[in-house]
Length: 270
Ligand code: SF4
Image (cartoon, rainbow, N blue to C red):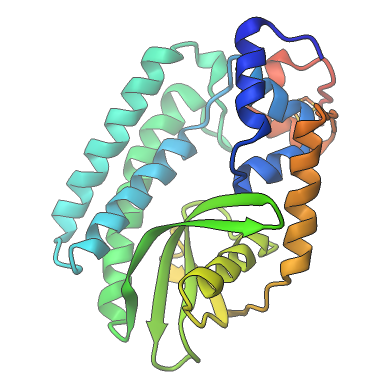
């Protein structure tokens, strides 16, 4: 692995830092993508869904932390401001239309960017309606965007959990992740959050679900029974791999949506 001085400094900083779910998942999906994005910091193809997701999360966080008092107009305005601010900053950094992902029939720059200005507003408005329709589901002990630092056999895992909720018809507290895109097909992230909540906050979480911006509803509750030893192995292998400089390419289906594909010699086209 040949690195410039700056890249070597970034690599050194990654050797001993806390691990996150997204960092670790990226390493498993393709180690070379991890290397290019985080250590070599090559130019990335952007997708406006990132700004949409961050802005929707921020507005929902404000709404919940403020006791659900904001009106639909206020939520829409907050989204407009957050999304526009982030998109404008991203466009300043990356004005090249070829470096923005298309989304279905929408060209990334400008169509998808413009479209998501509306889509995100509809999502925060639908979140408001959902809370009005389900007043029995409340945030547990102000647990919105809570940070955790979980020790797993010498590896520190850091993360932020969207929400812990109470629900009188379900058993005990639940962990909820807000998704502005597709519903996940596997639930490792929710299992990890459950493990952290129960070990660090004694939250007694036994189920989890997703609030889905695409439908304006929650998913079905999913029983949670995290396997600590599985996570020790999962994070331990990644941690050891990063320390050893193991950044293997894994070309395949994920290349099509890989942000660092323009700099990758292993890329395969679907
Ligand atoms: S284009 Fe494919 S092989 Fe290259 S870094 Fe991305 S996912 Fe890995």
